[in-house]
Length: 317
Image (cartoon, rainbow, N blue to C red; front, side, top):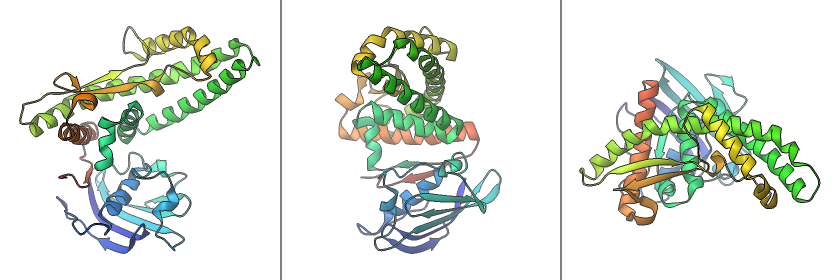
């Protein structure tokens, strides 16, 4: 995959810029606050995901302007393609001239990985950042995975609403059963995807880390599920999660929230057998984050047969 042309208008502090990147490595340099990270962020948006810096779409528009416009030409799947994005309070996307229902339609079309200072959160922060890393990485190669995540969250919201009612003595716990079945079935799909992805990622990331540390240290990844399962098949996971939901039903009613499932799982990142978050130095944590990102790029290439765009922001700091 190659980025052939880029144009941005009224994006953050960028008034108007166009350029044609070279097919190889491109270095963007300049003083602080000139818009280097903004440029990388705007390219990342064409993956179909939100900004890695903000959840507020309006912050992407240059101050004093009503909208921002982005456009790229990229070579993928054996042909040159075009994508455009119009941003005001939301994002409107066109792929090869055809207006899309959602920016998520870009998933699987333009593949990129981004490493920035924010990427350190996957090592330094809690389980939610690790789950987010996995979910984004998997969605880039399996676009239908994002639909499973959406379905799971909606199902869990319904179940939690019922738990609140029961906590107020306004319903029978038998009403939970259909939601438990749906939650377990969808949750098992998500966890199965994560296990499968991690099997590929752990070797790629370990190989990258081995190069960074010159073989002095070993990086390992382990998925930590919130419930025990006798195996990793989708059927075994669904049955185990359903049993865990039934076992925890009383405590879930008291707490009015669902206590087990992929929304509670974690990823253990270890250096020489020790947790990188707890025992790793800042340099080791940065190396882990970089290894994860470059490992992610290797997996995309392995599965899709096409190297993604690597967006490295302040990577040498």
